[in-house]
Length: 153
Image (cartoon, rainbow, N blue to C red; front, side):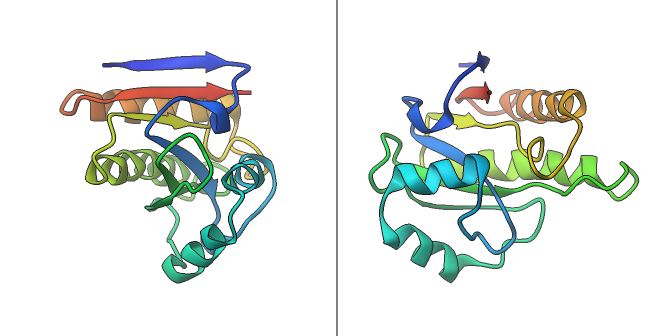
């Protein structure tokens, strides 16, 4: 079990136990990956579940059912909005990945697919986001077995 990078992939179509939603603190449906995941789940209960769990602080993660997706669970991980790199963005992004992995483990997941959290509308520089993602995931995999996919657009 290891980290694999998928280029030109779609996190909503991965054959995994859990997919990660790049969520906002209110866990509200949004654009980009978040919008695609809500659309793929195709069930109003997802938004209801998220309302009950919100707010979710930046750096945290929570799990919901995935409803009509191939995955069993959606792990909603809240990454930081990039400001300038001097507002704990790296620590918060690292924590979002670690907490998503912990949430998946708590649900008994053997596999998980991540988008590159915070690299879209949140403006985190892509190369830096990739470095933080790979570092956090590899750190987690030193102690726990799980198939992890980092899905890039």
